Every structure is written in structure tokens, then in C-alpha cells.
Amino acid sequence: MTQEELLEQIYKKDGKAFTALYDMYSKSLYGVIYNLLKDKEESEDVLQDVFVKIWKNIDSYNDGKGRFFTWILNIARNASIDRLRSKSHNNSLKNLSADNFVHILDHNTSVTNKIDAIGIKEFINKLKPKCIRLIDLLFFKGYTQQEASDELEIPLGTVKTQNRNCIGELRTILNE
Amino acid sequence: METQEYIASGTLEFYVYGLLSEQENIEVHEMAQKHQSVRDEILSIEKAVINLSYSVSPHLSAENYEKIRQRLILKHGTESGLVQLEPKRGIAPYLGWAAAIILMLGMGIQYYKYNEVTKAVEAVSIQKNKFEQLLASVEKQNTESKNALAVVRDNATSVVQLAGQEVAPQAYAKVYVNKNTKETYVDLAGLPEPPEGKVYQIWALKLDPLTPTSIGVIADKNANYGILKVESNEAAQAYGITLEPTGGSKSPTLDQLYTLGKV
Image (cartoon, rainbow over all chains, first blue to last red; front, side, top):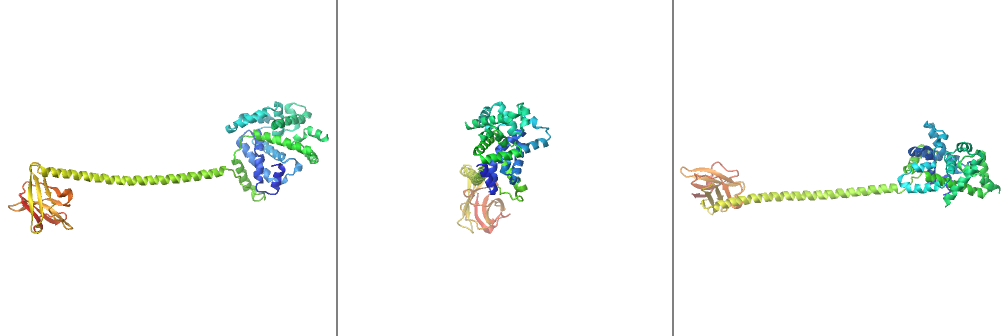
């Protein structure tokens, strides 16, 4: 199902719309939230908040604001960051950068998913380490261009294009 | 060419990441509406990052969906006029019910079988008791018969013939007395069945003067083939048998004297 088909279901108040929404995006959002919180239970809790928030505010979304996925991605990232702050972890965004999404696979793979995880790890490890860092900061953690430039010590003007090249690599790997 | 440069700038990735300003978002949106290639590019970038975040996600428990659903129904469902939320129908809840039903059936069958077996065991146990009692009584009877036979057969045993009297001229009985063991038996086979509420009582008699001594009240004249042990009475000069009320009498009812015989 595409974003457009999903939104059509939601606007038509189709009874299956919420289930479809959950099926399409829950795991991706959970991946993003977990990458920030590094705690499964807390991440599930935040994911619940996020879906409740999405559903409550769904009428306020329109495609002029961006992609639907982008809209819910922002909700998920913000909810996770709020949770980190509210827990007075003193976790500034900068401190989050020490770890990235590859570590999820290193430390938190349930036994049943092991083979899968190895496969995923292989494909992610085809990405250059610099790309892993860039995608992690920009996509998963929502860093601004300036923050990413500072963190990775790369010229501000090259952040976008370097990131584009990295996404290009990811797309190539996914299409292999 | 304009769109190719636009795509190459990396702005569309930032668009998908949600990192652009409101103004920049509107620009991208307009570009996308104008150019199919921009739309395709956005979709392709989005697909890549959705796949990436999906694949690094840890296992997400199945209850999570149900928890969200409950929260939406409880807190927001009724007022906000949101679309109806359907419970997610996986196979798991059905499996649970199926397992529960199979378990119940299994338990039912087990309970039924257990009951049947218990009943069978009880029946067998009752039968066993009956047989044991029967065996015990047969053994007892056998011992009594053997003892009686030993006395009757013994060379040291003398026989006293008791002849029928006025009340029952056809009746007869015998008394066996073993002079070594002093054991005394009566053989009542020749007496008629006593009427209801009456029993035979055996008397040892001294003749001069006539002194009767009860040596036994026979509750069941047919027990042990009618050969029954009674008390020995060495002084007896004669034996008599009278019909008495159940339980016997202190002295013989002489008009009910059935048999009598001298030693």
C-alpha cells in the first residue's frame, strides 16, 4: 500500500485504516525510537504514545507539510527526545551521537532474529562508516546540517551531497 | 536539467528526513507536483530509509498493537469521532482458544476415563471382598466338617441313637461322644425343620433323679450338614432333644420332646 492509498483509507474512515497504518510504519518507527532510547520497554511505550498522537492529530496532516512518513518520523523522534529529556538523563543530542543504529544489531538482537540480523548487518556494513554516521545523525537522530557538520567535522556545504551519496549507496545495496 | 540538479543537491533526502524549513518544504512540494522525476526520487529515498529503519528495529512484541488500540479506545475513541478500530486478527488468539478447547476436551476425557476406571476398581474390590468372605466361610465350614468327621470316624467314639417320641414318631437323631477327647457331636439330619421362632435344644440327662442339663441350642440345624458340636457332659446317661423358643430354655419343655436315647 502506498502513502496515498493509506491516507485515502484514513480519510474515508475505513475501519481497517489504523491497522494498515500500524502495519506499514510501526517497525520503522520502533527502529528510530529504539536507536535513540536503547531500551526496548521504554521504546515500546514511546511507540504507543507516538501512535496515539498520530491518530489523534491525523486530521492536521496535509501533504503540503511533507511526506506522511516524514510527519510521523518527526513525531517519533520528538517523542523519543522528549522522553530522554524528561528522564533527566542529561542526554543532549550530542551525547546521543556516540552510538548509532549499527550498534542495535550488535547488542540487541533476539535469538530468533539472529540469522536475519546477520543478513542485515552484512548489508549495512557495505555502507561506508562515514555514511553510517551521517545517516544515523541526520535520519535517525534528526540532527541539523550544522550539527552534523560540527559532529563529523565536515564542511557544512557538503553535508547534503555527502548524505545524498550515502543514500545512493544504500539504494544500490537494497536493489542488489 | 533543472530537476536533475535539484535532485542531486541532496535536498530531497533532507525533505524525507524532515529537516527542511517550512518554506523549503513548500518548494519541494511544488517541484514534486510539477515533475514526475522528483516524485519518483522522493519515493525511492523514502523507501530506502523505511527499509533501513525497519531492518534495524528490534523485535516488536505483538501486544504492542493491542495496547495502542486499547489506549485509543479508552482515551480518545468515543469523543474524537475517529474511525473505528478493529482488533488485529492474527492466528495467535485463535490458537489460544483452540488450545484451551483442546485442553478442556482432553481434561474432560481424562476425567471421564478416570471415573470409569475408579468405578471398575470399586466393583472389582467389592467382588473380591465377597469372594474372600465366601472363601473364609467355606474354609471354616470345611474345618468344622473335618473335625466332625474325625470324631464320627474315631474308634474311640460311641454313638447314642435317639428315637422319635410322641410329637414326632418318625424323627431320629444321633449323639457321638469321643471318650478320649470328650468331644460331643449331634447329628440332626433326622429331625424335621423347626417352625418359625423355634429351635432345637440338646439336653444331657441324668436319670435318677431326672436332671436335664442344656448342652447346646441349635440356631441352624442344617449347618455343617446337620452334624454339630455341643458341650460335652461326661455324666450324661441319656440325651434328649426338645423344641424350644429361639434362644433356648432353662429347662426342657417335655411335651415338645422330639427324640430321646440312652447311652
